[in-house]
Image 1 (tube, rainbow, N blue to C red):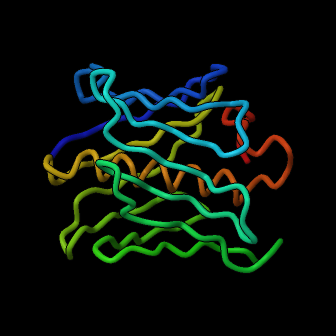
Image 2 (image 1 turned 120 degrees about the vertical axis):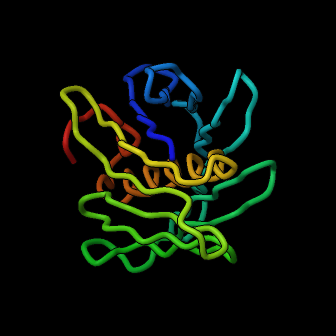
Length: 169
């Protein structure tokens, strides 16, 4: 079992850092601000190990979660406006999530690989994560990033939907 902390920092390149219990940065997440199709890369030692892409040009927004160049899950918006929700489609992945509190558990092939919850901090947000399977670390972190991006789209439907540092949404 491993405890991780995913911290959002406000920079133009949209950066998250992921730290272990000792405070060492294990992964980084970077994204592009001025692109129509939004991409976020999960980096380990400056090498991309996962990617989250928000598809812009579709009837209902959706987020693709990729690990090792393969799409492992899609988060699709269902419904519209006030009554919208999100559906998570994956063959081997199940996510139990409370969208209002962002408390979640992730299972892969029937085994719980991790859980987490979002905390609001003064100038952003952070996720407190518990990883149960070290071999599934990249998968778990990619899913957490995908959930964060879907939640950002769900709660803010304005031009500034990617403003991570706008305070509590």
